Length: 355
Length: 285
Image 1 (cartoon, chains in turn cyan, yellow):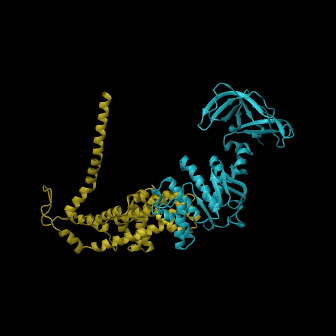
Image 2 (cartoon, chains in turn green, brown):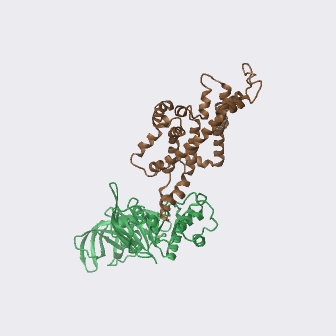
Image 3 (tube, one colour):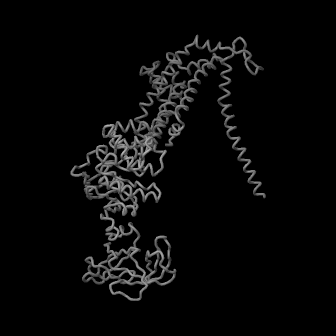
């Protein structure tokens, strides 16, 4: 039922600007995939190429086993939710939602039935005859969603659909979108620059930078094992430090870093390798005990700032090497600024990245 | 204490300004537009047997003599018909020409469209008489002077910039997302035009049509050069009373005849078409 989306070697340039270079990936039927990256990374361009609004310079788009390159946007069975919602301002909510069905020449009774169903699904019943400008932002967003899902597209596309909503609503709507997508089982491509949104909503996150795919993984992997400095830095907050491998034997390796000598997992390192390490702030654990465990990295530093975040306490710790490390600890930890702190970083929690 | 005084003084000044501004505007409008109309109305009603002269503030005797005369013994009825007919044809012609041009310049963003936009506005700044003399000759050579075709061509030339300007702004301010959304949902070119482009530029179209219609109704120079003597319109009749055989009473009648349809048109348009349409015409969507 659901469709596999294959993007194969897509290049796209605007004048001198290379927006996409050699982008390839496959999305399995029914998967929810997020294109994540900073503005200008090519994610929206890629979405528009999939929808058919832009023609790629190179490469192919497949829906299932069918090449879509020559198919105009109105003949591709995709449906898109725009960042601006793009509701037709002169049409009512009903007419907006019904538009795609009318274009597909579906029988009128069937149209009415499906509009009613979908309006119930997105909780818009009673607003049929309003014009878009008479709706709140959240309602407009739901009309846009309803207008897209009602046509039962092969591929559902989202272009930063939540960026115009306030933070509270955003969290609610992204759960709604996820639930609806799951119940319909439509292959979905979702563009966002919000890493928290990407992690929360996706089966697979594709991180993009400068027109290239940097990493394609499930949310857990992309957060815990970022493959590059860019991904580590862009997704969540991270302490990124450089280091040189001193010794690699068996399952552990020893690395000389700006924090001091650290034990890490051996991921096939060779002595002398220059690498980057990523340590998530929440993986830094304050140590109050006096006993030193041999398989732990125990470090000390001075607490420069302790910032109360509500759900956690963020510490900025200056090491002897002057390097500043960020740690996120339990909110009721008692620490005073200016005091020395001892903390532990488990070798498993240190992610090793090449360059 | 002192501060409070200054504050209350400021408040008073603002109140005064709030009162004075509308009052001032209203009086300027009255003097500028109201008085001439009143004056023309009075002159058109003067009974020729009781001339209106100094020191009478108002005519001593009113009659409909001049109105009857103008309608009975001049070509005014035919001219009114001509004027409306020409204005109608001009509006249609402007619409047909402006729609694709505005689309190309406003939406397609062709190379050099900024340059074309300036060229398009040229007829608005060109003196009508200067243009008319050469154009008249050209149309004469083409064999259309003295015909409806000829007059419609020159009226279209003069009125087209207004229509174009408004439609270009309309097309420019139309979000590309709307067009993309329509094709994304399965709309082909025809549906995109009839259901998205057209309704969205309709306000601009109405405003443009109004400008075009009124421009055509009031155009004298080119109508005279190209149309006279075969094709008379309300302005050419009016001007014939303003020359050497100056007849103030009769000119008043004709100028009112010219004014009335325009005023009615404006009022009806204002009533029928919501003000938001005018706003849209000026580029605020």
